[in-house]
Structure formats: C-alpha cells, structure tokens
Image (cartoon, rainbow, N blue to C red):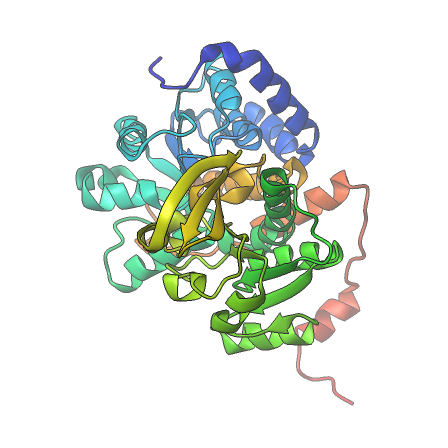
Length: 419
C-alpha cells in the first residue's frame, strides 16, 4: 500500500482520537453499519481531498465499509492531523497522502497521488482535486461518475466553471445542503474559529472589538459565538441583504475602512480574495490581530502585508507571526492566514461533522445509483437525503417531531380551500 504521512508511530494516538470522535457521530456510524451489509460502493475507486482529521477518518471508514477503495489526500497544508493520518494507514488500511505543514509542491504531489488512484467518485474541500483534473489531468476526468464539494469556496469555483461551460462531470454541492451549512458552517465554524483564536492568542473575548468580515453562514455562526462571549461585534459586508440582516440581529455594521480603525481582532469568512488589504491594515491599531476562517489563505492580502512591513518575526507565539508596519505598529497574523480553526485548533466538533459526513456518504450512494444519468453540471443534494440525515440526527439526540395528518397534507397541496 502506497502512502505518505508524517510518522506511523503516531497511529495509536490517532486511533484513540478517531474512536473518540466516532462516539459523537452516531448518524455516520449507523450509515457505516448499513453500508457494511449492503455494499453500495462495492469496487468503486474513491479519492477524497479533505481536511485529514479524526472526523474525516470516520467518513473514510464508512466509505470503505460500503465497499469503496478509498484514498485520501489533504485539502489544506496546515489542516492535516498527522496522528489521524497515521492511524488511517496503519489501523484501518486506508492510504493517505497528507503531511501537516507540507509545501506547495508536496501538496500537489499528494493531490496527484489521489488522482493516480483512478477514482470514479471524488470528494473535495475547496475544489483543488477537481481543478487539477480540469487543467493538468484532463484525461482522468472522463471516468468520474460525480464529485462532492463541501465548502463555500469550492462551490463558488465549481458554479463558475458550470456557468462557463467548463465542467467535465457532475458535481454535487454538498456545502449548500441545509443539513450541512445550517449546522456545520454556522455552529461548527462558529465554535472552532473562536477555539483557534483563543488557543493562538489567549486573548479575553469579552470587551474585545471583533470584526467579522462576511456574514454568510460561517460569519453568522462566528458572530453569534463571540457576541455571546461578550465581544463588541462588528460586521462588514458587500451584500445589502446580509448587511441588513446583521444590523437587525443587533450587530454593528460598517465598511471595512471604518472597522479597521477600531477593531482589535479581524476574522475573514467570505470565500473571496483580498478582503483585508494594505489600505485597511494601515488604519489598524497597534497589536491588531488578523485571522482567516475561509478555505484559502487569499482572503488576507498576505503579499501586500509582507511588502508593507519593515520586519517580520515568525512564531512570537504558536501560530502567531508579528509584522511591523511603519516604525513600530505590530500586526499579528494567525496561522499564516490559513484556516484558523484547523491550523490552530481541532476543527469542527465531531457531533456537527456527523451530519455533514453522513450527507456525504449518502450522496456517494446516490450518485452510484444514478451513474451515467447525470449531466456535467452542479447539482443540489436531493431533499430526501437531507430529510434522512436530519431525522437520524434527531433520533440520535432522543428527539421526536410531529407528522402531518392526511387533512394537513391535502390542505398544503391543494388550492380549493380559503377563508
């Protein structure tokens, strides 16, 4: 078995964390048990370019139980948990190509190793795997039944490819599923982003002016969490509807050029490029902290920050680099501008990833059933999968809900009855 991980000696700790996470992922566990009986993915080569974490390991276990030949590679150079990667190889027999802190050349070497697996189904977190098969590995795109994408950033890239007529195979926008973004993005990103910032800085959140750049589902979740901890929370937006929503939910809303003057901590959660630029950094106060919780590190103009700095000190604290701007102003960049929640913390809690990865696993089963019937475009997750995941999660939480009576069903599906 070919693989490339940091150190197989880390496997025992990785296995402990994988099984600990599994305790909090009952929906995925139930799917894994059914997959082990029914083998819906039997013989299918699957390559997944995802954050290699304990939670991701349990998705890989479910896919393997379903009969898939699974290979994993990392979707971000700083998000791999080396112990989880080692355990997947040693304890679960799943090849992994991912090393925390790998450089760009190694990162793409690992992506190409996943493509060399000749997958017919792919999973992506940011669309780097799909993009490689649309640019440098075009011949490999022809065998793909479908790909699943689970990030806002990736879905943006793929919908653009779809609109431009460049997409070569079907893609399922798992990120846009309600069972994913309403929970994973909002509650998972919200909590884990706070976790990463606190681990990096040890700052007190209460009384701190926190600038939330972007009020999508990730931004909303983060804004909710820091306000609940006592932060003076400011939102910047370009979308008038989202800005209005933030204002009506009690957040301060202003342009970045105004927020830059008063913020203590700035966190980007947009999926776009250079939303914090030198023009904003020049306005920031001494010891301002900048972090990113979007998928790619391009949300902060790091080359611009580097160019305007007279001195850069790496590692003034774990995951903190100090940039001196002008004569003496200190700007602190966290985790090299990469995903703060995974680079400096453990990522989303397992209980919320349970839903996202359950949706991924069921979607893989669905695309196998519909192989050859899907066009090369971006699809939404079918509502029946969404409902199934949410019902299983409610059951696992010991919660029950009502059902419609026949009379109510008739009323909601007819137009004859009025006042």
